[in-house]
Amino acid sequence: MKNLLIATTALVATAGVAAADISVSGDGRMGLVYNSQDTLLSGDSNIKISSRLRIGFSASGETDNGLSFGGFIRADNAGFNFDGGGGVNGRAGSVFISGSFGKLSMGDVDGAAKAAVGQVSGIGYTNLSDINEITYLNSGTDLNGDGSDDTLYPTPSALYEYAAGSTVFYVGIGQIGTQIGTVSLPGGGFAVGEVGQSYSVGAKWSNDNGLTISGGYEATNDVAGTGDASDWVLGAQWTNGTWGVKGIYLQGEWAGFGDVRQYAVSGDWTTGATTVTAFVTRKELEDFDLDTTSFGLGAAYDLGGGATLAGGIASVTPLAGDDYTVGDLGVKFNF
Image 1: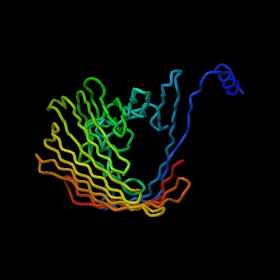
Image 2: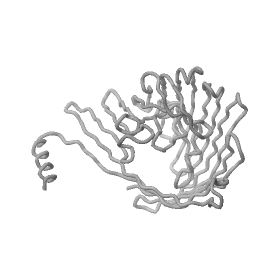
Image 3: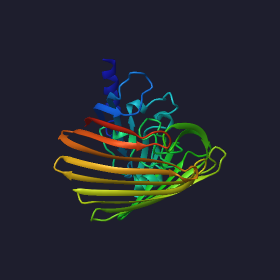
Image 4: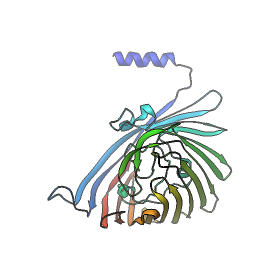
């Protein structure tokens, strides 16, 4: 009764005021994953059960003069997490305000280069640990376990975007000043380091024939006392609704890693409710004569109602160690 009275009082107090909209969504998945690598525990299985459920909250509103504002946060990211992240300090979730001037977002948002170019298509119901993705310098915090290998120097960020006809322009900046944070290594794994100011720019152009051309530049200063890091990236994509192909090329010089080159290509074919996807991704650390390559094939069948049956298999050549195979098969849901 107390909660009902409080809610009723709030409704009366806000009568006549434009109300913000808050909606709840979610995603889930269940199935089996496979990894051919030897496990740490003797007798352990290479096949494992893998499932999860996540609930997200979207909020939106509008000012009296027509500015839109809002944000998104998942329930598991809302508070202060054990790794120092969370929506309470801008390291998870995001908020935005937009109008005729464009859109400004803050929090766990992409850098401008990644926002413009993105990633090639992934496979499987788990996306196979995002092995299809290239590594960007600046792409938000990624402390929530999603795409943890797609950014090298993660910090809370701000992203500005402005659309002019068929072209969208992006400008990004990382947290102001020097930060101590987690560094996601391009070949897998993590480290803790000190990084300075990061910034990025990007642009994306599309036409009515399904063609998109994109590019970006990003940089981070004073990386753990070893120097600066920067790169440029180009992307091209074409789709006609049945066939689709996307390619990405990145070249840069990263403090501590030297000259870096990355390539990624994916192709998609859709017929009815079925989509078949293949990809190849390669990352090269030229100064160390090291490289890693991943390629895979997957398929997804739309069951309707937000459910999809999906599976994939991929081969991975890591920076060090033997080649291994990963795969999965399961159902993923959107609520």
